[in-house]
Length: 452
Image 1 (cartoon, rainbow, N blue to C red):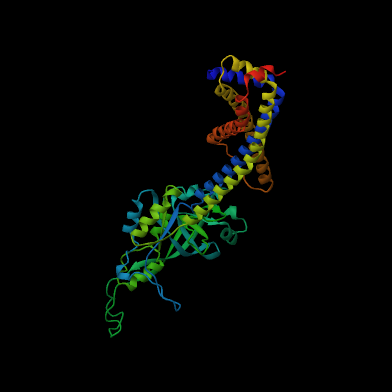
Image 2: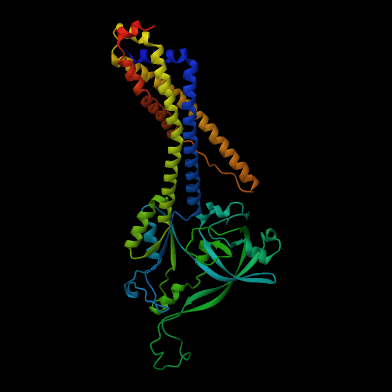
C-alpha cells in the first residue's frame, strides 16, 4: 500500500470519528502546550541570565595579577623570587592583547583624589573607565551621558558622591570640578649634591620617585547609581569615573611602584592589575590558561559561570520532565481511541485483508492514524504553548512595572523547540499506537468478515 493511500485513509478515519479523535487530540494538545510553555520559560530565563551576565562584564573578564607575593602578618606566602617574576608591564599587556579570543586589555587604575566643587571638597577614588564600558548596564538610566571621546576632560560621579557635593545632583551636570591628585616623578640614580650627607647607610643610593600634587579641572557629564562591574577585584567603592586614557596620563603611583623602587628599577612602569576582556565567555578558559602559562596569577568567575549553566540545564530537564507527563497521559487516550477503532472497523480490516492487504499494511495504517493525531495535537499544542508563554511574559512585565522595574523577556520559543515538540508528540503517538496496530494486524480476516 502506498504511503499516500495510507495518509488518505488515516485522514478519512480521523474525520469519520471526529468527536473521539478530537478529544484525544485535545489531550495531546494540552500535553504539548504544557511542555512548550515550561521549556520556553526555562529557555527565556536562561537567556535573560546569560544576557545580564555578559553585559555586566563579570563573566567575560579575567583579572591578572603580578606573581610576586609578599610575606607579612606572621604568614609566609610562597611565590617566585622577585628577580625571576615576569613584570606586569606594557609588554605583558600587549602580549595578552594578541591572545586568541581577547577583545581588550587595560589596566585597573584607581587613584585617590581630592574633589573640590566650590566650598565643598571630598576625598574619594576615581576609576579609569574604558570606552567599551559604555554598553554596561551600569550606565542604563544614568543622568547625563557617557564620555564624549576617548580622552576628554570629563568625569562621571556616582550618586552618593553627587549627593554629598549638592542637594540637587542633577544640577551638577555641566559644572566644572577640580581634581587634585599625586603625580609620580622618577628621580635620578643619585641624590643631588648637598641634599643628603654621605654615610654608611645612604652611600649606595638607588633611583626612586617623588610625588607631586597636581590639579586638573574636569567637567561633570554624568551621574550613575553604581560603577561598572568589570573590576570585580575591587574592595573599595569608587566615587567617580574618568576616561581610561585620562587615568593613565595622570601617572599616579600605584602599590606596585613601591616594589619597583625596592627592586631598584623604578623607571620600569608596572601595573598592579590588568583587566582582560574576552569576546565571549566561552573563551575565558583558554585565555586564562595562556596567561597563567606566561607566569601571572589570574582570577575569573569561570567556575561560577559553569555552576549557573549547570543549574539552568537541570532546571530545563525538570521542566521538560513535568511537561512531558501530561503528554504521556494523553498517549493513553490514543491507545483507547485506536482500540475502540479496531472494534468498530473489524469488517473494514477484514475486507482490506481479503483484498490483499498484508499485516504490515494494516499495522502501518494504524501507525499513520496515530501519527496524524500526534501531528495535529503537536501543532495546536505548540500554538497554545506559545500563547501561554506570551501571557506569562505579559503578566510578569505588568508586575515588574508596578515594582518600578524595566520590562524583561522571560520567555523564548526557538524554532528547534517548535520542531522538537511536534516531533516528540508524533513519537509518543506512534509509541502509543504500537499495541493497537499489532492487535489489528493479528485479526483473522475470516473472523472479521463474520463479525456483526
